Image 1 (tube, rainbow, N blue to C red):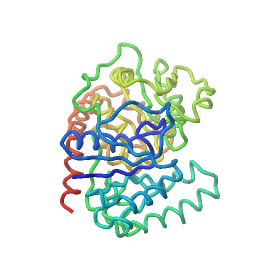
Image 2 (image 1 turned 30 degrees about the vertical axis):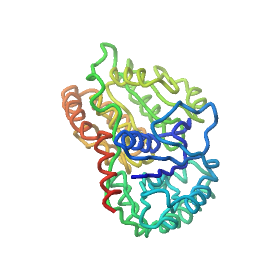
Image 3 (image 1 turned 120 degrees about the vertical axis):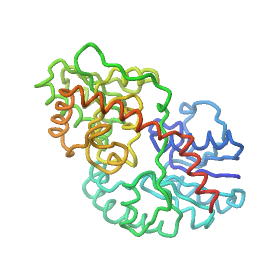
Length: 355
């Protein structure tokens, strides 16, 4: 089968996230199984290239123009491909309008309240209540795969019915050594881009409140973004902001962590929660879309009201209950084991091939 994957970010983009990882893993696995896979994405900066891949990459314009350029490409060359899989992170490509039933959409998330957090009041208002609803309604005729039940439910409110829910896999599943507790004080971890919607500031504030009970606790912050300088300027005791780290260093920090804090505004799925679970580390996460799907509340971690006080209280209580954390750690590893890339690739291919 000849497959074209369409996305608005290059897999080597510095801002690439869970959606890009999902697509890259699908493309790699399908290519290894004999499928002919091409990925159409914006052209990367030369410094962002990370070497050869087992599938072809076609560069088409910039992040802004790729939505137009992808449809232009399909009008000219769409008949080359048996299936087209577009990735949707808020804005769709509407490939079904060009290639019809050969098109599928892998829908990661709707932005909804992220509009109000990442943009000005006026832009956020227009985006949330006019632009995004218009985009989503335009997908009513498309064949949609949702990455989580939360995303499926969001889409259904606008008349888009996902044909299946297929969560992503996780690189850490089955590869990481078991979690071991440090002999020092409690260690907490935040992993994510340092942008408003990920709410790293909430994790730091929750940690600051927690220090009243656990003064020897530490918080490691993994990730980078436009908020890094302002977060560093807070100078909260025992907080280390590492920026981007290697996979080896991330694994090491996860192995040493007692809890992972995830205070995101919303997620399509919440891959960070599964990474933590694969290492046997319970999480304390905000009770929002996506995280409700990737965290088994009370079993692999705790969901709390979306504010730093509630997160600090939940984390402090969990640190004080070693037996509950051990039980969660064991359940978390078992929970994460089901989320393999092989399973995700098989499930998505089954949908594509069954069309």
